[in-house]
Image 1 (cartoon, one colour):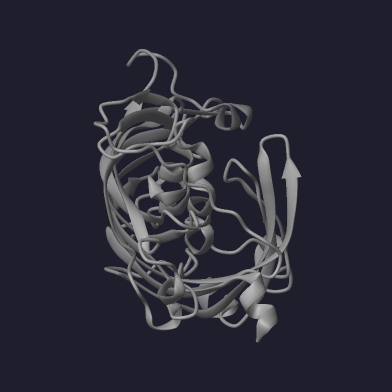
Image 2 (tube, one colour):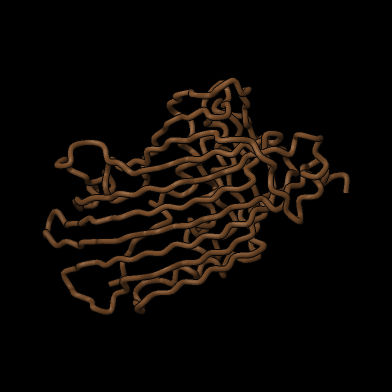
Length: 338
């Protein structure tokens, strides 16, 4: 049996970091001015990002039926170029919900494993299916993604691979920064639950710091916007987030999430990890320019049937490196003037 560890659902990921920046603030800023970083989208805006990710998993699964052929090490390398066209912007009480059309101008992935398990689908296969395809979806003010339309004929449920869209909530991360703006050297803390993990009560504890301002990176396709900004407007805020995993409740309390319990399962074990994200956000537009994430997680847990008592024991170490870069931004006004 292959190790069924879904790193996309439970890795710290940019999606977790993005939504977490802004719960509790301990300001230690000096006299630097406060800035409010808010990305504003308009119908007709077009953005393109490059995403590169490497995920390495080492682990094993002990099952009632031994399988010595199961893989113990695997890796997935992903290279994407994603174009996001803004279709609609809907104002809501919590902020603006944005409808996007996402097109994969490039979607390449390759996977490797130290053994072959025919019962497990190749994690790289869905990426070949989405290259050149488009999907429409809605990005909520809190970073939630929903209403996928356009991939129903090639992917189950029409939902793209998690690692192909997990970074997108970073686009509205600034909406959850500390109220009143942020200043250089200011630090704030936050907590974000780990959705989809097999153990209840897991959360990322995060501490973020607004480190400095620096010139935003300039990319080949960026000449229509960045190079025409007024002097001093091509700066980005650099923010570092340090993260660790913790679990609420007693070490002896039941760790079974409700959805597992509803299916007659019980879970127990441990899950630890740490990581960091270094991001740059435009002071002028509030757009994410770059983000670099590194993280490492160690899982050791058991899933047991409450009726039969049969159990599967999983042990894994997952290491992730992800880089995101804005390579083109054409505002609606510029696009119409062409």
